[in-house]
Amino acid sequence: QVQLVESGGGSVQAGGSLRLSCTASGDTFSSNTMAWFRQAPGKEREGVAGIYTGGGYTRYADSVKGRFTISRDNAKNAVYLQMNSLQPEDTAMYYCAAYSRSGVFDMSLRLSGYNVWGQGTQVTVSS
Image (cartoon, rainbow, N blue to C red; front, side):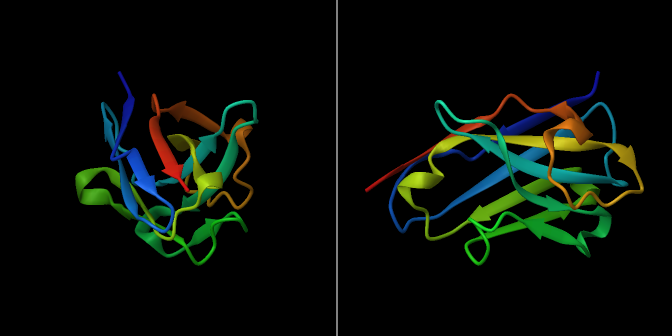
């Protein structure tokens, strides 16, 4: 059974940092685009960052450019999201997801292209 498990969420003050981790089990996603999404209460889930196999291609939402960095370690079947200069508007449940097609770099960060999801990890940023 394919499974993605996120960790690393927590509560921080504005300006702080967190590093989220996502580990895959039951399958390898080394050839898939991996991405982080987030969903705040009362809002739609949105794409935050995506990374292609090997880490050579990345994509960020405008709201996090320059503050968040996505990376991956295919040997560990893991994806990470380093979040710096966190702001209250970054408060959300963060989800890791795998793109449904291997060998394709997804630039869109649209939910519909991702078919494997983790259970989420909560990030809360206080002012």
